Length: 339
Image (cartoon, rainbow, N blue to C red; front, side, top):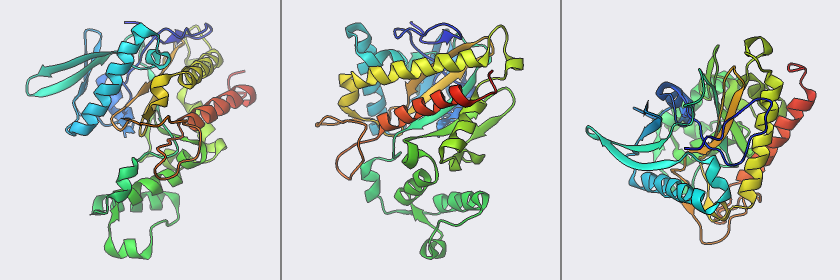
């Protein structure tokens, strides 16, 4: 299996491949504890929330979704990208390699490349891409939910301001569509086209709902979150965090170029998908695309860099990626932490 991670100070080649996580986020695929903590919603626990993932003999095993639709979406994209490695599909090297479905006891698992296999005690970050994190059909879901109302009330308490209406407080419930649109509006999803959903380092573990990440909306706040992902010079062994940041900046540029020339990318609407970042104190870094269970094919070409209007299926993925690349570059130019 080809790896796409690289050492700080060297250029990352576009033909390498993968990474994973450990127990909190929904990060992709390696140590089960990291992956579950960063993922899911990595917290996202899409970086933080998959139950029961594990690694074994160089592979990452992710439990199959109970939703047949989500399962079909994810395996379709993973299959397409894995097959695309042989045909030169540009985005395929940024997606973990897929090895089918396996049965373990009563559970089925998606067998994937272990993206974190070459990392030592990796630091992880989950970034959810796009100007919206919900499928258009969710807007038709009018079922009121008390659990989502309660979560938003907690978020209001941490923000120090109210966003729920009097009618919603009276009903003590909101729809999933209302929850997701509020969630997007409070973060940098709508302003920048991406949001930091989770960060795991040697000293802290932040998820969107248990830290200030959910309300990081402007450039300055988002850059604070991005800076927190990499180790300090004192924590590095034989490398420098500035070199690691430079390497990741180059990888983001390679990813953007790959997506801009990818037929697969233009044929699909990417909702709720994430970029999974990994780094360790030896200088190794990597970034990959993960989480495709709401990624769906579109008959018309998706541009990914124009405004979303109901029915046009635009997701703003490239808007987010270009802004992420812009902020990462600004961080390299302005931040004195890595001098």
